[in-house]
Image 1 (cartoon, one colour):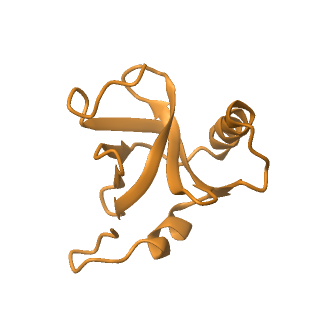
Image 2 (cartoon, one colour):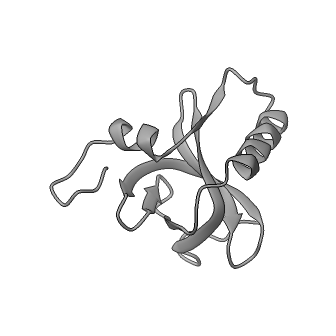
Length: 112
């Protein structure tokens, strides 16, 4: 069970990646560093590349720790597809270079 944003406003993700889902947007995929439980976030609404920090529609802030892990991301995406009855045409593997242009840039250098 995912804690509420009030209970857990900040999460560190390891073995992370980015998924693009049709009609939803970009979502973070990774392992919750404190619990070891895989997570797919709500859509990303802001991203700060220098600190590798994202804010999602839920209002939670995620810090991406370590390098992206494409293998773990692909496994999580396939599990997401099976769980929600999606097809491979509904989701795609993405990376930071895909995410940044999808969000407007603010003067401080982050995207939102």
